[in-house]
Length: 282
Ligand code: PAF
Image 1: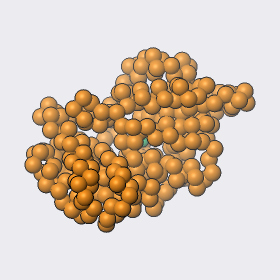
Image 2 (image 1 turned 90 degrees about the vertical axis):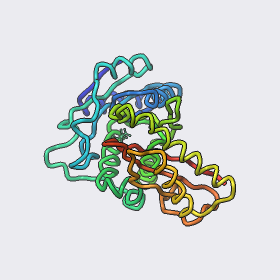
Image 3 (image 1 turned 120 degrees about the vertical axis):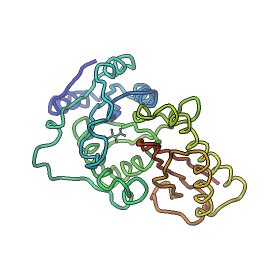
Image 4 (image 1 turned 90 degrees about the horizontal axis):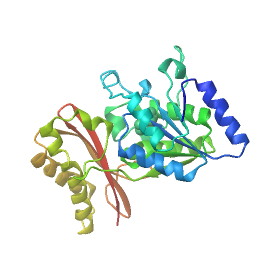
């Protein structure tokens, strides 16, 4: 496995691969790998001639009060794991290599970014879309693989690719979960023992929401009300950041569930903010 830190070298390497008609799968990550990342890598490995993983804790997607400095980092462990998953090239730039001091160009998809996580993280998706656009320009991937846990991120990146006509297929892969249902996340390491034991209630609530719809409930307000009660009972140290019922493509809030709906939530347990979602088809 080759490790590159210089964006120009990455671009040259990928250009030479594309000139030889080799397909490239890109898995953008912020490192601290878990099985969720490995499932994205394994998918990319199977689908393309070359597999690139980017490992970059992107500063522009963290707000001033967020956990940029505390974000878990373990480069040696991640590099070894990437090697074991058949990664051809690990791209791990320093922030200065990705952003000039006077960086001024942003990619924004405001219609899809203002709801859900965008409400409490107003600059987050601008940072995500910008860094992913930069990675696409450098790595020239034929496909890029993302997890569905970050469903809003996926919708935004799909729209960015469509609107800018970028020649890359954006693939969403199912959320990988712990045995008790908690969605895998690099931030799960922040949870204290008691917080960790209550965290699976997030998933249990979302599954209950799917049941309520299966039983005939169609009102988004009622589903939200029931979920708030469900979590109030089970997440003593939890505080709901949001729970929303939205259209899975536009991320616009729904009043009534007609065919497809995404129930998405962010919950703070102690100091850790966890997100999860469930796609419901009537
Ligand atoms: O999902 C993530 O880990 C990040 O938002 C991403 C896509 C790697 C961009 O920094």
